[in-house]
Image (cartoon, rainbow, N blue to C red):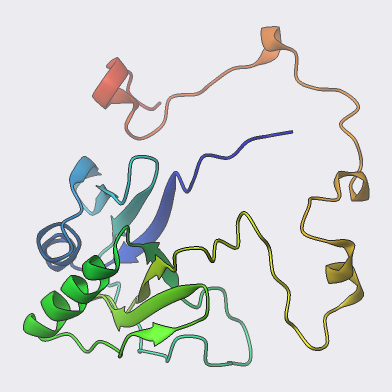
Length: 195
């Protein structure tokens, strides 16, 4: 089975990379680890953790989205509610709350969700963000919990992947036919320009 090692990167969009860098790098303390670009296009990556990045495309004309309360139901086309970043220590959660408030950002109270404590805010692009600290001894990754009072039948199949529910691969790509094409950023590390 495929073993995932985290979120390689979340890709967001901004119309103001400078404000975005000030927030993610300078206020939150995430290192700016890569920057791709040319006139009219930038794609910058910030380090969340050892395995996880968040990236932003800067496109002219992108405007901050209207703020929507985290988890509040909506109707119609919709794709994204919020992203939560893990914080190693409870003190880090309070430190973030204080930093965000000192910088003029609205921040929720610390909320107890039973297995995590969280705060909620928005970045300068209107992206809804949450910061969460795992409560000691309440690790849902090790001990999954389902307390939905009316779960769908599919939920009752359990927490483990049901790999037999999709067609099996009948013809895997042979190693001799695997080709990787240069893309944006390959010139940073390989000197290869995208054609």
